[in-house]
Length: 424
Ligand SMILES: CC(C)(COP(=O)(O)OP(=O)(O)OC[C@H]1O[C@@H](n2cnc3c(N)ncnc32)[C@H](O)[C@@H]1OP(=O)(O)O)[C@@H](O)C(=O)NCCC(=O)NCCS
Image (cartoon, rainbow, N blue to C red):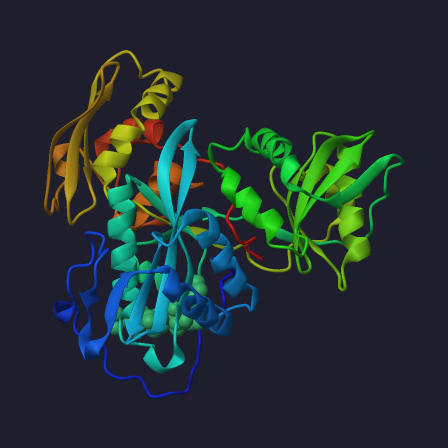
């Protein structure tokens, strides 16, 4: 989702229900769950989708309505939750199923998108309740991570942190040359395997990567617009790009002249000056055609619901990092406190094993451990600073005597993520 500006309905908000009054929705409410004021939260049924789409179109972009219908058309309604007043949908969100690769290890991940509340129902905790539902469903689906794009600050309230920087957007200041023989055309469904291959190649150097799943490629092509473009040379697809309004992203082509032709084509067909997403690897070919970034880059939100489960899943990556640091030949005991809870584990040639976990641990340093605040755990695993960089930036990130071990386990990570909406 594009990070829409926060809404200002101007309508008086009723007082929010206390959280105590809400039922526990974190176990995936597939049946009706009553909320205060006679409202009901549940998984959407086909009959709810038209109304949920109307709400999304009203509160977000008009195209959001069609996007929900497209997603439900292939996924069904199970990932969509609604809050109803009678038959009327007054709040909704959708949970998408994704995979984030961390150092090559696939991590099942959820992504919340298409979030909106009716103006008359804002500020009553409906999205808070829906996020509980989404996180319950995400956990039951086996997700070990959640990532998303969203409006500023809002999702921090539900356990998300700004963990992964997005590539900067740079204005096109001169139109690059087109290349003889390279033809740019809208992508069609038959192109999906080669689109996927081009993106896998483009993302290969990123430590943390999330590509479009096959059905997402389908949605993006069927969405109309068109928004996905391929470059053909002598009948073979040799590059791709994605456009939304004045934004050109997801550029992927092994040959520089093809990248330039894709950007030239976008500039030729845009109503206004275009901005190009400078993902790793495309900067040098385009450098002389791009101006300085005009805005501070945005960040993806990420949430780690259970650190022990995520680290256990990432054991092969952690072992490889230890080996790369010359520490891979023996078992290491680690105490990691997030201050309000902690885990103690071993990692080494025999894998990852939890020795214990529990509540607040206020003195990890004196026990030979490290302290990392709960809202920096996703950054620790996925972010560009690594453990050492977080310690420099955060007064409550303290690595203690385990510094070398933590630095080896959690080095800075580069990232390249693709989401349903091009975050512009
Ligand atoms: C943003 C939006 C989804 C919030 O929905 P909502 O049902 O009013 O949200 P909730 O009442 O569940 O809010 C949860 C908490 O966030 C606070 N909050 C509400 N809107 C907020 C905002 N825009 N920014 C920050 N905090 C906000 C609430 O006060 C509440 O705090 P509390 O639990 O401490 O009382 C809704 O205003 C909306 O549909 N806006 C237009 C579309 C949009 O921006 N969608 C999100 C795209 S990512």
